[in-house]
Image (cartoon, rainbow, N blue to C red):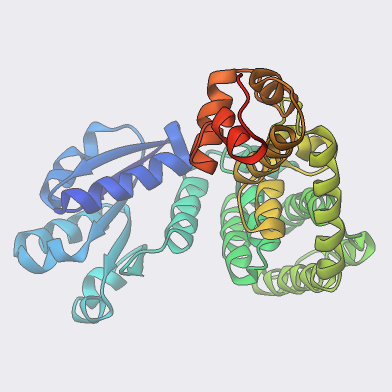
Length: 356
C-alpha cells in the first residue's frame, strides 16, 4: 500500500486535497496529514509502505528548516510532488529537480494530480515480471482503463494519453522483457477497444490495433505515439457519428421514458435497457437533454399529472400512482414544489372546484 503524506498548513486546502484523494482511492492509499515537513519526516519510518509526499511550496518559503527536511526526504528515495506557483517553482529549482519528483502548478487540477499518484501506486506494486496478463494485476482497483475510457468519451485525447503513458511507465518499469510489455499492452488495448465499442457504438478496427505490435522490441516513445494515433482514430470515428447518434439516442430515451414513466425507473435500469454502461449513460443523458435524469423524469411525470388533473375526475392519490408516485404525500410535495400549489388546488384553478 502507498502511504501518501499531504503537507499543507492551510486547513481548508488540506481538507480539500484529502477529500479528493479519498474519493478517488478510498482505502487503497494510506493518507497521512501533516502541517509541516519535519512532522512528515519524523513519521516516515512508522509506516511499512512505499511513500509519496505531496507538499505545498508555501511551507518551504517560510521555513528554512523545511527545505533541509525536504532534501532529506528526497535523499531517502521518497517520491515527491511539489505544488507551487510558476514563480515558486522557478525560485526553488533544487527542490523541484532533485531526485524523483514532479512539480504541479497551483491551482492544482485533478487531471494533473491523479496520474502522478497512479504512477507512484503502480511503481509500488509487487508484480511478477513474467506475468503475461499484467493488466489484470495492474488495473483492477486502480481504474486506469475506466479513466482512459472517460477521457476518450469526453473527447479529451491529452488526458487519455496522460493516463496511458502512466500505464506504459509502470509496465516498462515492472516487466523485465520487451515481449512481456507488449503482451500486457496488447491485452490492455483489446480490453479498451471492447469497452469503447460498447459505449461509443462504433466499430473498432482490431486488425489495425494488432498491427501496432509488429516487432519484438518497440521503444516506449514509439508505442506511446502508436497508442495516440489509435485513440485519435477512435475519436475521429466517434465525432463523425456523434450528431446522428445523439439525435437517435435522444429519441430512444424519450420514447422509453414516455412509455415507462409510471414504473419505478432508475438511470441504471434505462442504461441497461438501452445497452449503455451506467457512468457513460449518465453523461450521455445530460448531453442529450442538458439536465440530469431525475430532473427530466420528474418533469415528464408532473406534465402527465397536470394533464390528468385538468382532464379527469380521478382522485389525487390515484393520479400520483398513475404517473409513478405511489406515495400520495410525496406526490403532493413534488407537485407543490414545481407548480407552487398542491394538486387539489391546481385542479380547482384549472377545472373548477372539486373535492379530493
